[in-house]
Length: 510
Length: 120
Image (cartoon, rainbow over all chains, first blue to last red; front, side, top):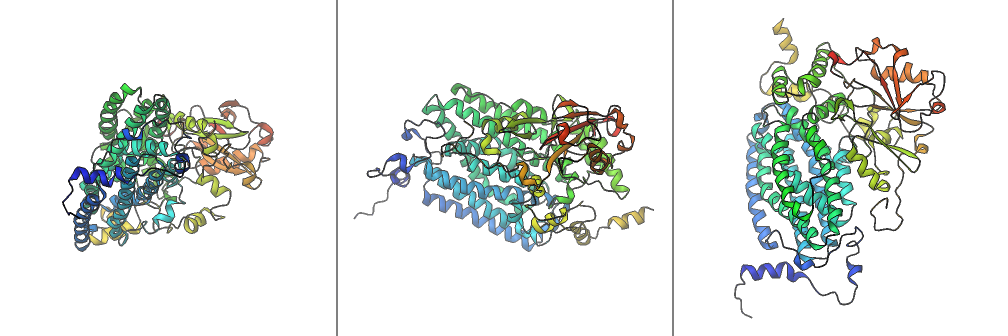
């Protein structure tokens, strides 16, 4: 046997398309039972253009190089006590939100692509899904490693997988991925591959990674760099799936449009968490949520949908509402977490005077008019020793599961209420987007595991809310939760930096 | 079609049906123009709870931290039930006047528009 070297093109063909074989003794529909039920019509899988142009052996080599660099920097970060060099201990709460809310989503994406990669009839699409599944697994793993150092010095990191499955606000990202993973394979690809990884991904990664860079968090920044080339590949896959589906059959167009409408809306609702992180949790601000939204959705997304117009695809149905909400959503989301700061596994706080001025400048139409008076009142209450906590559990949206803290954009001081009746029961929503998603597939969303209702049904321990928070959620009460001011995190930080405690500051002032 | 499913006639478990709440029902209450309470709140109450108990105990426990709360003229409160105008009778129970499971009660207090009139 000659051991001539095969060229790249041959190797690529052998390691992707050539992995397929003829199905001679089983029916195609038996092998790929999920390919038809969504109504998507595939006429020719060979038209699939492999987005990655990468073979598995090259992939391993490439990723291994990146890992070496990443872990070298993580080691250096740990040995140099990098945790002391972030801008302020408040910053670390953004990382807690990332580890509990986003990293488990990477794991969900890994499982989702693993499953879908088995269900698609085209070998090119299957190989692409397999690689993305491995990428996602790598992301959750490296994120946990990058953030584990903080777990030694700050509270709230310790039980993140347990919390992800139970805690009220983490049901928002959890139900998002559960929804995608229980859909058919093509909806999953449009939901995660296109709507999330292509249309909205920059709004997730740029804020967190730039936020880390601006706030001295070398560990998280380095993870970000290490994931960047993967994300670029994922975006290519997202775009390929859309173009492939639209080119295969005209009947696919309305189905794909409906999925884009749905997943754009679900994605923007989930990104409310990122919006508040950017505007409220970063001591050094990168840009405002509104600015990020304008750059990454209105400009970049706008030109994408112009490109897709030739297929008959339009802007997502609720884009107008989402665009109007850019001036409100971060303030409303932070209000929710401030209300329920006693029930969260990270700390909340009121912005300083300087930070409020930044918000006024960035949100000239909304901040002083709607939000500053509320925040100043809360600050007064805190100064009087009566830090405001909402004593009652919130009403949640049946679809996105977020407390009903969003308002009607025509009337921004009025809560947005929507209601449907289905099979003799009432269901309530925060928006037209969430109501329409329910109305189209009520048999799916009647099953929503709404944390507040589960507590009231007695399924989360009890009888007191403290029992739910402590025993069922595993929040260390008085340590992980409550206001940043007075927290053990703050005390440790002040001790490291020889900063006066809040009490000492008061003493000196008087 | 009520769900895209591979199983014919798929139905989902109704996770929040009335029977799951041990004899109680869920009632949501929102106070218009008082977004210091970030969202409407959820209570679990017996269907035969008198409306007076809802106002005097339940609503009061939820919203009394707000400086406007003590100023409310309860005779002038404008009520909505599931988005329809509603004239509750204090002595009647919730269920007798149509407040059923997962109903939304909204109260508006004209003249009281939140902190510095901001709707908070």
